[in-house]
Image 1: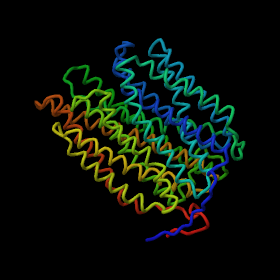
Image 2: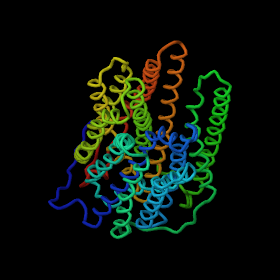
Image 3: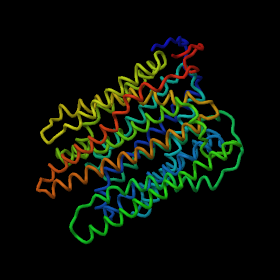
Image 4: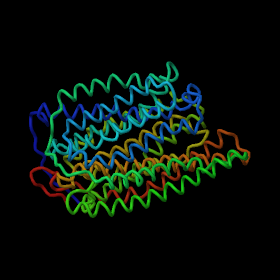
Length: 498
């Protein structure tokens, strides 16, 4: 199996100044939006004390955010074709900035919850907008390099978020999490309103309201159902615990059932509407086998990435008894490596294709996940930090070529829908990964403590089993790495890939 490609070389910049400015603005805006998304989990204990709310109520600050993302992202494929680039950016950053302002000054839980929903509405639009714009303006021979910069956004922001939040919470208050983000968001909004130009042509087909409703119940139902998994693992002996577990189990079953049925109806509706080019989310993108295989790989990676990114800090804090800030520092080297390696890996993709990246990335990712299953109370940080760093390298070897190859497999008119599918899969499967791994960890920990184990020993045992789940899910990545290739039209000079 070999590939030959000649990549055009130029002495000038990859993009004209005005288009390069648009790309960098979108990258900065997406980074800020995702950074904000990952800070709330660390802040929840502080919010419970400051706002005098229950843990269940506080959890809605993350649940509502995830639900909103799951509902809005599938709609972005339609929006990006019907509304100009400038209008979409201004709408997204205005919503995000407004939500951030409301969160910063929120007098109580109700306003803060509304603020998180408004924030999520803007965040949900940013990544599909960024991906679609890159595919529209970046020449095929340079897409890997630009997608490498996207990997900085999707990897560095989630890792820095908890560290930044931990530092602010230890030294200031939770409101500063939003106070630091707000001016950056406002500057991005002002610069975007001034500099972003409209890219591509827009269409004027009316939006299908039934599709929006089915999408909301389908994707929202699945995500909400996943968030209820933690409540089904309660093992308390009190009547209140039993009642809470029964309610959570009922919500889980009903939500997943509603989600599956609504999603099936949504798919049938789109298959009908795409015949006249009126689909909210055009599923013809899956006619490309390469796109479908790449999305399958992204789904598996999202499960292990978001799940492990959530469980590892919990293991470090609850089992090894590190502070939130210390646990954030422990995962920072891996995040920095992902960010720094992204553009380099993108260049390799442009010149060598996918196989030289995906196969080593999948093998490294799967191997490190199995190493994670060996973590115990006696495992030193000098083993954990390098293991996480190598896992991060495996992930970035995978994400950058998958993002690029998946969208490059589509016709330009489907870029926006492909970006929406990519974002939806990441959000829904990522939510499933977080929910399942945390639920497994909680259940095993509770059972261990019920059997006489200490709290930290129980947390360690629960983390081990959660990592085992991620390791099992990661095994198919090795096979899938050989099914995705670099599209021929993305090689430059018409070279074919074999």
